[in-house]
Amino acid sequence: MRSGLRWTMLAAALVSGGCSDDDYSSNPQGCTPGASQVCMTATTFNPTTITVSAGTTVQWVNTSGVTHTVTSASGSAVSFDQQVTSGSAGFSHQFSTAGTFQYFCKLHAGMNGTVVVN
Image (cartoon, rainbow, N blue to C red; front, side, top):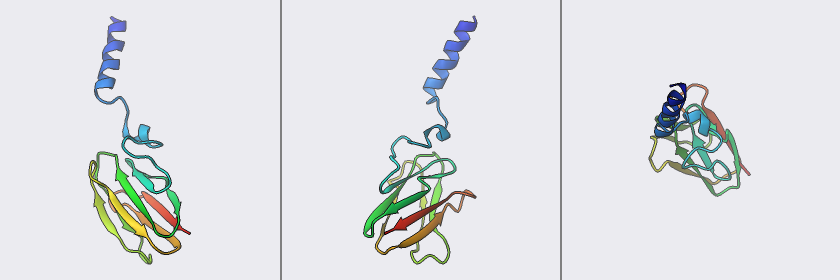
């Protein structure tokens, strides 16, 4: 009977996906954090800081199942405030000038990120 319970639990985990959003924080499905892509998970931007060259378009992809925003911090020379739902095309912004640009999610306290443009 105990073996049957383990198989039932394993089958339930496989059917439900088996992993929480936090399990995908280093490489969420549908998003590859890196050179110009930021993945939005349950409570973080990944990577938290991204460094790009001037003229690069950065894309934020929401893989969390909840809505987030990508909102430039007040006082930033670059202004954006975009709601990004899970499963959407995401949000892209081209950074034309050098500088350090901080942003956050208005819906989740502590969810912050930085784009450094060389």
